[in-house]
Length: 396
Ligand code: FEO
Image (cartoon, rainbow, N blue to C red):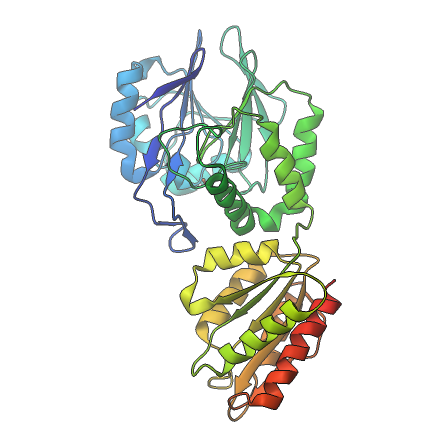
């Protein structure tokens, strides 16, 4: 499958309807994904990125139907992660001498992964590659989201090939942002930002401003995953600037796991207290055993405050809670408030462990931890409700 995007530019990627997990088990893809590769056929022919390795044979076969492979003058590797470079070995088997353009770090990464001495050409910000009447302009995008990332811009057609930036894991044959369900598209974009780009927000702001300062006319943004932004492409750029700026909504999220329902009862009472506060805050209650971890991270991203709970087990916390705390640690959320709670029978370390973890991850702890011995009785449930109310007040 291929289709024409504009003039001599074609999408030659792969729609992966079956993808359920990405980055190993780290990222859930409820709506599949796409690996977008683009073929530009001007006086010179350039291929921008390839696709994930398992689909490399069909990718190269399809590409060969679109163009004589020997007529590809340049391969652009905007990013060396295997979902975009995975088909390079199969492609380069057919065109071993064709030059590959990448950043200095891209060279390291491609060599480290494939151990091939291909015809690499290192580019940096501002370098251009002439395709005849139009040029490709390169901009390094280090840490958006890997050190090797870059984007390129096609003059004349005003297309920005942004690689992972502005992407989303969303499979659709419709391929354009204006043709798909807008709520689904937004949900996948914010999930992608929250789970992948949050730690790099300061760099995202700086880089986006740098690209905007170039004042390049922009007709479409062509990312490497998901829909092509042809309708108001600037909307996703503006959204990124908002998300990168310590984004939060008027939401508090209570996150917990439970063994015998004691911690669940505490969580529900805390949520009740938040609801009963006069702050009119949206409260969400997420039981980790029943929720997708990436969806939980997205809710944390949207929250101004979180309250996390686990019962004490073996002087520690439940593994589901430990796992989400580990994810939280890597994502470097900023300007969010937090508190911790947990039921216990004997030793009762859980709430302190959670609190310490959240504090070291950059959260502002606003209340002492809430510990409830055994199952909560009426008195302790009232205390939990009051705790929720106080948290809502302190998070206003
Ligand atoms: Fe879509 Fe960083 O790879």
